[in-house]
Structure formats: C-alpha cells, structure tokens
Image 1 (cartoon, rainbow, N blue to C red):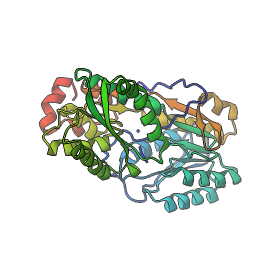
Image 2 (cartoon, rainbow, N blue to C red):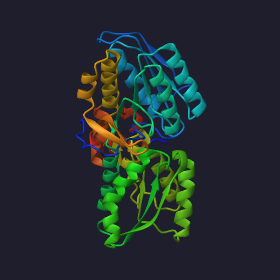
Image 3 (tube, rainbow, N blue to C red):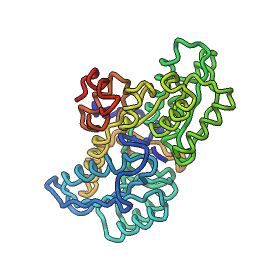
Image 4 (spheres, rainbow, N blue to C red):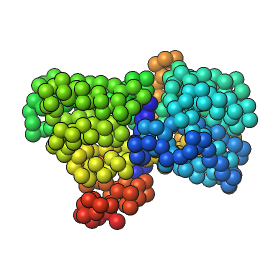
Length: 379
C-alpha cells in the first residue's frame, strides 16, 4: 500500500474532504536499507525532549521510505530536540505491531506511524491511546483508528494531475482508449488517486472523447503483478492501447516494460507518481509522460512540528499547524490534518526535482541521458 511539489506549499483543504497519500521520491524497484531500518539520533535544541518512535511500512515497492522519509524525519525530529528511532516493518504486519508495542512500553513521547494495513494501524493507535501516547498518522491514515493528527498530501489532487496529464496527452486522438492501473484496493491513498483521476476522465468517457478500456487495482502495489495484469489487459484488447494511467512510478515502470516488449514504449503515454529516479529517467526518455512530485521534506518537517507541540501538551499549537481535515468514513470522524500540495513533473520540470535536492543529477544523467540532462540544464 504505497504508495509519495517542491514549492512546499501547504494545501488549504475544505472540511470533510477525504484525503491521503502514497508513494514518493524513490526508486520503486526495491529497498535501500537494511531489514532493521533503524535510525537513532541524539537530541538537539528545538524545544522538545524525549524520544519519538517512527514506524515506516516497507521497502519492497518503494525505496522512498529509506531514501527520503527516514533521513528527513530523523533530521526534522532531531531539530525539534527529540531522540529519534526510525524502524521499518518491511511489509510485515506482525513486525509492525511488535515495533509499536516496544515503543509504547518504552514510553515514547509521540508515536509516528505509516501503516501498511489500516486495521493494524488502528490497533496500534488503540494501545497508544490507552498508554496516553499521542499518535500521528504519517503519509497514510489508519481508517477506523484514533490518531490525533494526520500528515500527508492532497491525494485526490494527485489523481487529478494524473488524469489531466492523460487527457492532455490524448487530446489529439479522439476516441483513444486508456487503461488505469491503480494501487492497492485496501489503501485509502489509492482510492483517492483513482477518485481524482476519474473526476477528470469520467466526463471525457461519458462524452466519448476517450474510451476506458479497463480499470484495475493492484494488490499491495505489487509492481510485478501490475505488469502482468497490464499485459493481460493489453493482450485481451488485441494489443492496442493509447494511454495508461499508472498510479505510481513503480507501476509505470512495469507497464513500460510490457510496452517495450511490444515496441510501443515512447509511443503510449504513461503517467506515474513520486518523481523517483527511475521515473524521472523514464520521463526524460519519453517513455513516461509525467510523474507527480511530493515534498517529503515538508511532510517530515510538519510531522516534527506537530510532534513537538504534542510532546509539550500544546494542543492549540498543534491545531494551528494542522488546519485541514481528513474524513474517516469508518468511524465518521474528522482527523485534524496537514495536507500538502503535489506538482506535475513533465520533461521540462525534471530539473526542479534535482535543484531541490531530492534526486542527484548523477543518479539520472548517466549514459544515454547525458545529452538530455545537458539540454534541460541539469548538472
């Protein structure tokens, strides 16, 4: 369940809007850290004190968690004065629960969790509540849970950006057929991505401007399954597809592999999300039409500021930071939230991601892309 604008703008979101996020600035081909994925840092002067426990979900489908979230959360929380311990559950729900039990029993000041399974997150939150430990849902919500706050992105907007990009890419081909390869059906982020995409694409389908060939969620955001599923849809449709809305860069890469096998890479626009190194390279090669960039540093810093306020019992201060709301339909409550603004990245925008320091030029400018990077002013 994964899911990831360096202008770093906080979104103003209306009450009752259901929002969340997934994916982000990484190589979706696999993890980058050890299985323990732990990180500790000594306290530094930011006004807060004590220990914050952070549990990230996995590395199998997106390396964002180790490459970006872990160091950025560590730095942001340390700057607030906390001792920080970041762990990764590696997609194991039992490990996630065990890590949480350890943090709770050790009496952390604040618990920050990005649950792979919302039900597991909700169970953790119930234990933390009993122990009097505030919880921040990070990047994805534990629907049905009791988290005090939620920090993420406007994920319906992410989907809208993807849907609009597909509409733009196919505007010269009336009646063009597209496929939607979505994220995990159990991930609220994926639900919102799809909702955003459909808000743009449904009217075009209704007017016969475009044709939806098929929409298919992919369990666990499994890239290999995404590729296999797309190939089956592609074959069943007689080897014809004009565009693919892929929910993140990992799934986009899997789709591109199938298109390449059929000589269609670069000819069929594919969307993505997370502005990963692989995704950005695919955009520069013309094999991926766009990706969506999300400011993980801002997400981490907002989380750290919330944690500092909560550790000091400053609810008013926390509320001043979390001015948006996420509606949780499972228990019909609104979670006070920070929801950040995503940004479309086309080929001409790739430099933005590098300039802001999320991806190094050396990661994306080697070999066949050296000349392209030079043209785009990336160095």
